[in-house]
Image 1: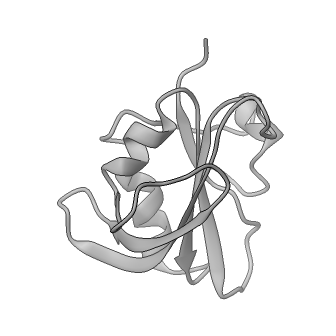
Image 2 (image 1 turned 90 degrees about the horizontal axis):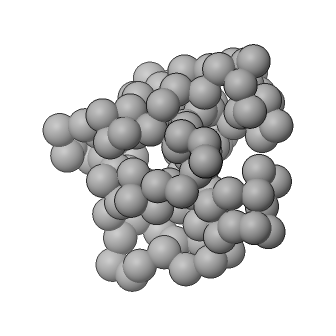
Image 3 (image 1 turned 135 degrees about the vertical axis):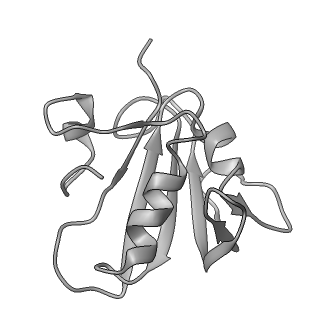
Length: 121
């Protein structure tokens, strides 16, 4: 079984929204520490809520989409956080917030290359 990993999944460049993707068996538990909403995440349903940093401060308000294995690009559980601003500091902080919650940073030579179109965190 692989470790749970996280990475910015959108390509570099300008854009309104960036995606931080967490993939692995602990994806939902990890994202639960950095995403707060009124309703629980449901499979393949966009859920609006607050995206938090490591200290629990609100970084942004955006969407989370959970996708349950095995019907995902990696074959594992995936949760995506949709954050405003492709080049903003909050995107990198959002991705780094997953690290203390036990997600490993994805590397280009790891299995993350299957789903990440951007460089690692």
